[in-house]
Length: 581
Image (tube, rainbow, N blue to C red; front, top):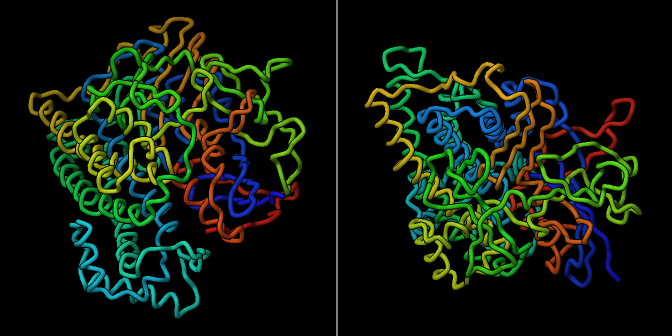
């Protein structure tokens, strides 16, 4: 008889996610993905000035910071007919590329690597052999030295001697399925710490153009950062020189450290290319940063790999790529605590007419099990579907779509990885494949930033192009009385779309279909599981007291729920606290 296991909360993610599974004889037989918080920012912006909405919806997330704001201003521009100047669009693309690079590095080293890397084991390593290991996997990172690895080893030893593991507290370090040798663990821990420092260089690009981070500033019709090479208070040559240096550092770290680490680690855990298979329909509107104002059948408003078109892979058929039809998107709430009105809850609504009406029917926390609710509702996440199919979005979807279109760098990196690991394209639909795809995409994103976006922006500056704002559609009296628009943009975790309806100069309806909703959503009226749930079916589970395998697969999606909240009772006191690594 199957036993039940709850992992709540799933940590090393943004926000609150609860996973319930049934398991038997070392195998998970069924799973439920449960988003246990509600915020309702979509309803907060109703009735507001569309030009202000980006500042509100940007607060949906503080990790993928700015992406919701870009999606918002693009949707508003689509609705009112605004056309930002090319330099403003390039600035958005540059900021998106920096954010994407930051997000992937943070995910791999700080959110996901500890699922594969045994920190405690690093104390047993020989620093010289760790350097040799780094060289053997092709890592060219400047931090691969005996001195640096000795320093990190002493840090780990000090933590162990103190009895307090600091940021590494709570790990399942005695789990039998940690496989890396001590030297590889030492190298990885060292790179983990290097990446903490490296984050600053990446995110400074966002700060220069956006004024701050998180939640940089945006502007309907362009960007809020003026350009004047001769003024210190605007974007000038000093800023440009710094950004070029930071972009070079981004590329060096990703190509010399991140990609070799990812390939080496997943090579040791090669069986995870046969674990965590999820929904086999994939959707992407291009490579990372690709942005559409309105239908993806038109031209992108971004300059990121415009040769790679939007595409859908249906039902695991990797021989054909289908056009993306935004009209085929529907959101279902049969497993979520929302209501579409009497008799409509089994229907799927298109985002252009979507509703966000909370209707909580679950038990009062703390609760023991949500998956068997009599009304079938167990989550705050809607269940998006494309043409009736549960669909994966994210780096893997983008890499597959680019690979099928033979994008040069993507094809080279993927073919090399397939040959090295001796796996096939279908095996990329896995825990290992999602982890590898992020590393591949980090390389292509850094390449686009350094070889295409920045050079084009600089060439335009040389020609005197410093215009970053379109004033023609700024005033509400220039807008139609009733208009609608939407945007689709490829951000770190997948395809993000914002949909807006403007009536008499104010927002009358707003919906955001975010990547994690696509992935974390529950069952639909046909009983299809969401991608998280599907990935955990027929999944190994060695030790229910240390559910490391669950973390590996769920983290491979890089969950990003809304910003963290505390669970309180009516008196404002904490009800309970559960810690997992």
